[in-house]
Length: 471
Ligand code: SAH
Ligand code: SF4
Ligand code: F3S
Image 1 (cartoon, rainbow, N blue to C red):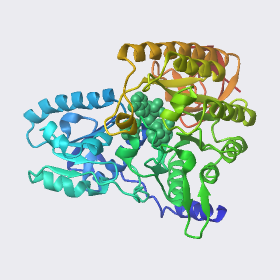
Image 2 (cartoon, protein in one colour; image 1 turned 180 degrees about the horizontal axis):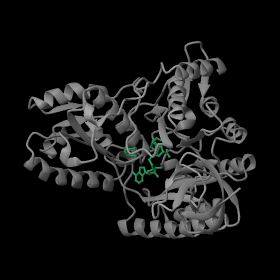
Image 3 (cartoon, protein in one colour; image 1 turned 30 degrees about the vertical axis):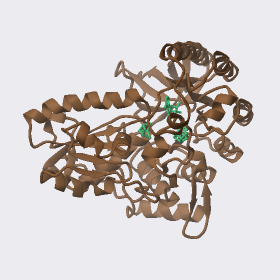
Image 4 (tube, rainbow, N blue to C red; image 1 turned 135 degrees about the horizontal axis):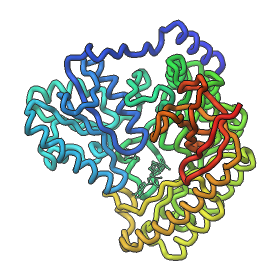
């Protein structure tokens, strides 16, 4: 393993692998604009798309009016996510009326879910491309330029875009996302992802490490390894070495002690002791785990096909805290899944009380056409009940977040400076290892983004720690 890594690092130092793009805005006569919705995978895919389009002579623009091509990278996870996209398409329609040559393309999960239906439903759309078909974009654009409406929504068992060096869009130059796998084999009954993203496949470990090394060489100081279920990462290299997620984490951590490593998302059934021990071993692997629970009730978890019980989840949390007492923990929760009773909802609240997450993403159940739950179960919890339960979950979590942040007052954390704080260019912002955002005055220190500093926390809100640099 160490040999592969060494080889990759050397190749990079010689500038052979992953030559970054020369980003000269004047080098491109045609311009594309891309807007992304949904999870980080989608934002990361947009950077792959940007790379493919660059090769075709399209430069990225942030100015929608300057674009010949408009792309919207879409999400299907909940009905509301799809509604947002439809609203945006309505806004694009007005622009297209004024600029007839403009082409509009729909990418991502909604493209995959609706396929050619999109062209019937939304007349203004010219190109529909699913997440595994971005390599065909140049051909599809050419056809669309000739007046043809085009669709490619083929899913693949192999595509990982391993050889494509993403063009970083809207980058702060310090933190970046690196996709390590695609698709999902889990079949949680509520979830549309297995249908929109296809079968799970892992990307070549050598190309992942090479991309991380290249990012480091270009000044980046944090990578987040992305996948729907990172713990089931599995790749066999050309020399027969088997690489599981803990090994991959180690390889990336060894790129440099100055490169922070994060990952998302972990599945409670798959996260192993090896991963936890690797996290504890390397100071630069951040002590933060996003561990979606979805529900605190075992019967509902079974209905969701999450394949763990309430007790299993609680045991996992205990294990994480045994190995890393200071590990940050966040989660996802769904309220009002099919047949959830009031008592079962109370189990979710009581699990949250026991664990006390630092942060959570909370949703009410939204039935997605074609999923196992839509086919098997009735969406029988009334909308107002779902909403009320969600509110209870949110209120409880808000208290826990406030408490978690308040408990950090007086502590000192190592922070990676990401840039100016949102509110003032007199302050820096950056995260601690536990993924909490910290804001602190720049003062007269000769620091820049990408530097590490120790920051002592003086005050806290429920989402930010405010402090000052200490030596
Ligand atoms: N792969 C990740 C989650 C991806 S989707 C995992 O397995 O944890 C992100 C979150 O959206 C999920 O964790 C879930 O909480 C939520 N979600 C997914 N489908 C949903 C639906 N139909 N209704 C409401 N929330 C949903
Ligand atoms: Fe969806 Fe479950 Fe896969 Fe996550 S693990 S993407 S929730 S099917
Ligand atoms: Fe949405 Fe697709 Fe991600 S459905 S959450 S963009 S995988």
